[in-house]
Image (cartoon, one colour):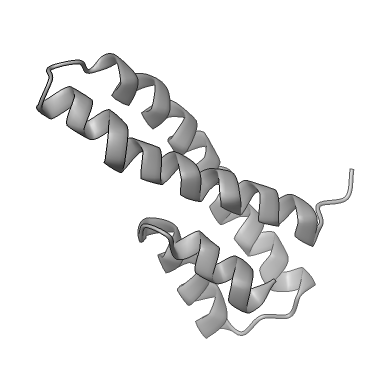
Amino acid sequence: MEFSVKTFRIISTLEAISFLVLLGIAMPLKYIWHMPQMVQIVGMAHGVLFVLYVMGALYMYRKMQWSITDLFVIIMCSIIPFGPFYVERKYL
């Protein structure tokens, strides 16, 4: 199966949503209402999606012939809330 821009866009969107759910829903549930179960579930999903995002970014770096600076920005956007949405808009 060929890894495409569409596949990376889907992974990027899912990674961004999982990060926002982790920060906005799961973490408050854990620290305010003492319900850590959601962090375990969403945290694992987000971790897998994060790894896929970084691997996808490295693959797309070669395929799209991005500069090393672009790659750095794209990977840094994965640790900023809403960052992957910026990447989709600017680079894809």
